Structures are given as structure tokens and as C-alpha cells.
Length: 228
Image (cartoon, rainbow, N blue to C red; front, top):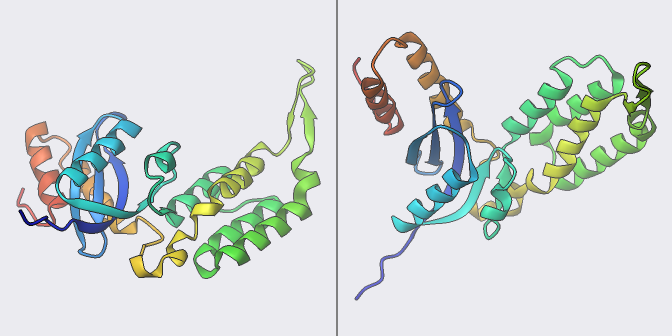
């Protein structure tokens, strides 16, 4: 019997939701520019990602790398392949903590560093992040006391959270530069465009029945247009 060669694929993975419990997990092959797996989900869980991997491997795909949003638990699940943290999602995390226009100078500098993620390499980014931390470490350690309870908390909690996010994800921000032969994208933007289109389509046709809605979504994810 002749063995069937596995189809190697860089798996770009992300979820899109049209409500709190109505969404899809989608896996895209960025090189062939097509979606290779999608499933309707109620919540973004590790089990859904595990099922996606199992299904793809059962179909003959060999995942050579993963591009994802940094969801906790994904790294152990795909620990045997290179993992790229999506720059788009990392920037969104920082904006969520600092806003797009931080008022504190420390936040302005950190936001600027993150804005240039794609123009740096891992060593340069690591050095700049460490320089930023050394400059602002005392500021990050400032504490405030609640006059009613007497309990203290860090004064700049959101700034600390932004820094911790970058420190946590730093080992995965430049995976795409370490494996040039795999041509790993540094974002999930290949999916984001179709997600934006899906959300707009569902918004415009929000009164349609669920069965028709699923058919429309399936058709779009299959990379072909559908008449409505």
C-alpha cells in the first residue's frame, strides 16, 4: 500500500462571534488562501481547538505552524509546532489596556513600541521592552491606598497589565522570523477580512432564519459568493 503524503499547512486560527454564544472557529491556510476548517461554536474553548486539530489531522493535514490570538492553553496544545502570536491581537490587547491615546508618558512610550512590532526583530524588541521597564519600574510599583478599607492596590494597574501581556507573549511574537522556510504570517488578518464581511452581512440580514444564516456563512467560508 502506498502511503498518502500529508498536506503540510500553516494553520491560521481564530474565532468570530455574532453574539455572546453564536460564533465560528475557523482555520485558514494562508498560502493556498482558503479556509480548511470551520465549525459553529457557542464558546471559544480549548476543546474546540483540540477538535479542530484532530479533525484536520484525520483529513491528512500536517500542521507545521500555528498563528493564533494568544488564548491561554493554546501553547501546550500546539507545543510541538512553532506558534506565532498575532500582532493584530497583541496590539488590540495593549489598546484595550492603554486606549489608543494614552495620557501617561509611560503608556505613550509603550504604545509606540507596540505600534512598531512589525518593524523590529526579537532582539531589538526585547531590548527596547527591557529598557522601557528599567525606566518605568519604580512608576509601575507605585501603590495607592483605599481610604475606606485601608487596602492598597497598584496605582497603574492597566499599565502593568499591558507590560505583563507583552512580557508573556514576547517569545511568540517573532516566531515568523525564526522559520523563514515556513512563511508564517505574523497576523490572522487573512481571516479578519472575511470576519468583518460576515458580521456586516449578518447585521444587514439579522432578521433571516438561522438555517439560511448558516448557509450564507458556510458559503462565504467556502470562499464563494452567495445570493441572498
